[in-house]
Image (tube, rainbow over all chains, first blue to last red):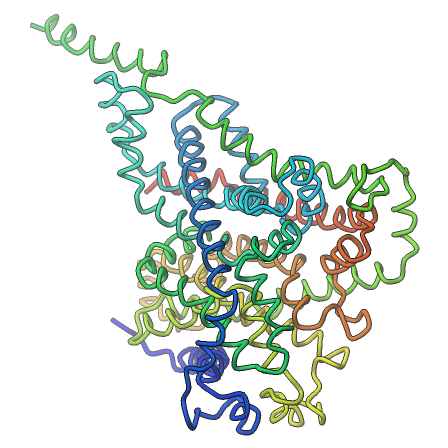
Length: 271
Length: 313
């Protein structure tokens, strides 16, 4: 039976305003002309809605940034899924000290902030002669997505019934077959959570692209946005249009994968 | 008859035991090695390496050269570093103080069964989709003293010229607010998940005993959310210690050095002044604090405890 909780409801509405207002300004501004935005202020509805901002941004290097980012995101997600599935499988199924230690490394790794280790990562990347390549961004970005992914998958895979493993083992199934025919199908929800979260992480990454790439042809979206600050110096609507365009693709993914993503994030909380 | 029954059972049991013994159908540890080595190479080893680099002089191009304690004695004497550590600590504490109660209340509320809850919590979630860069740019334009929202509401907040980011306290407050705006939704979700897992029967029993909403919140919800609070707090604290993108875009560490927190100080020394040895010493502070927090996490929540509740289900 639903109980009404008026103070909480009111509080959540206030918070809705705090979250929603900037988002409104963001979207409304993209249909404004520059002069209209300056004259009427950020809260105004556009008098004469225009798509000129979108045309302007799309004519710049935006699409090349978008393509680079899509590539980095896809490869990162693929690496993270492959590695975290095999690690999770081993942690759940293999008894013994080694697999426990490996799990502990990932648990401790949860709190290693990428900002704090970016200097040695920069050293490693230059020594590998990967500086200013997309791979320079992909490798460390994927590595820092691993701990949470392993944690989520270990949680999912633990819930698979022990008897299913046993009956497959009795049939003489190899670990590869158990993985592909039992573990992967039954942990699909965990795997898609991991995929979406690592993709989001790669898509929104900033520090590694900022410090590990240099040339314009290797630029990613977030870094491109940062550059637009200079390029569209006083043209706030154009800048905000670039911001909106950078969020649209991930928003579309979110519409399809919302439930996975949310259940994955809620699972992080522990019980 | 009895013999047949036992002998009929025996092969199955033996087979099962031999499965356990020989590890048929269990992957070897080799399976975890690619993932583990990859993670160690790009995350764990750099964490150790940053401590070593803190004892060197390195301009980012040549090879680091050993200089012993000089970075550390410089760090000990540098007022800008002292200020950065102090600012980071205040920011972290204030972030926790602001975000935890709000996220907790919103999360518990969102775990309930009110109408429109699904829609509202979907909107709460939206800021998580944008990158820190994108969101900071939105706020940068809203806080623009000439064309932004702040030009209109600034006077009401005590900034007559609307130049919030130009004042020391205003810029610091802006970072606190913008990061809260961005991250409270994440923590709300975590609390929502935690609150959903609290057994309904506890509330029913409390209601029968005549406990009201407030009493139920303090006697059931809060204690039951203990582990969730710890987990969320650690994510929050480590997050606050490492805010970077928002600071770079909103304030560039200014005005002066008044919002130069530790990660920005590291960036400034390392990648603007190309003094990566000294920057590594600054980064080492971050690593030590973050690792301590992470160890506390494992101790306090006990991931072993998580295992046992799952098995009990």
